[in-house]
Length: 203
Image 1 (cartoon, rainbow, N blue to C red):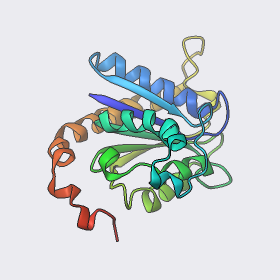
Image 2: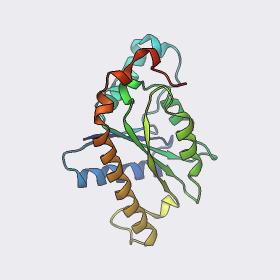
Image 3: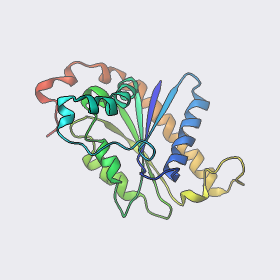
Image 4: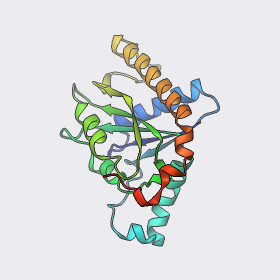
């Protein structure tokens, strides 16, 4: 099983990256045959999309092809988004202008929202509303909102508290759910009918 985690924070060494690394660790611990890649938009931001991308210019191929290859090989995606002023970061919104149905179409994805405080619900709503129309990514019903993120998932040096325990259990449940969806949806990912070019974009 191949997973790609999109870390949507535009900051270096972000809390979203901390969460992304924890998710990667948990997947690999429970599924030793799994391959998990993290695309960190903090350390490797994508340029703003422009129409030259459609022309496949060498500059765009150099930027996008390595990410495209990971997405095509993925069976499931995890989208990790912090909340910037009640919104998904611009860099993550920009990311969703690039992948096509051939890369992520009909693949299950888990939304993981991250908040330093008690927020985090707005990115979930925004991603479910506007990030899947043409690429046909399929968000599973379950999602995670990691609140007060600075205080949890801080490694072995941290004395585990009730919040830590709760989030770790919830993460395990959501990752197992994602794996089951990926297994069940494999025929959809391979369906030529669902890649029909006449109706490749959503309405």
